[in-house]
Length: 217
Picture: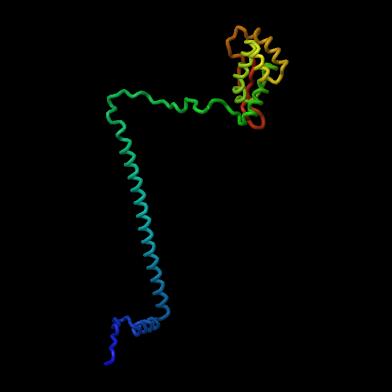
């Protein structure tokens, strides 16, 4: 009445005895044949891996090309309907308006903060009105041109408010007095454009900046 244990039959060629037999056969192979066998296995393994790598590269390249073709077809399909029904209409020439309009370009900041820029402009305008002509960079000369015209316009007005505005802008009070005396005589008949800017022939030594002189007319 004892229990009976059933054992799973071992497949032929898979048991311990079969593995031992294969080991004995492998050890019976001469060393030279065994080395050549290993070399052949390595070569076959390398060829198989190279083939797998080549297949992977080709697959990735094909997928990327397919994506580019799909993107180009999408762009063409989106852009194509723009001209539908426009053949009978007279198309006006297209102009590059962004290059012509001065958006967000109210004035030149001269690479300085507001207080330093104002002090620089006041000093240059004072020297122009004192000497009649100064040499500076082209950018600064063009920036101070309107302020010189404004000071001469105030002198031509000649009232108390204009004189106080000139005192608040120019650094030399004696210069303001002489300006309010001489400007109406010199520019009384001229409606505007009291100074000119002309470029110098040679740039400034050191930084090669473009120079110009600004002078009173």
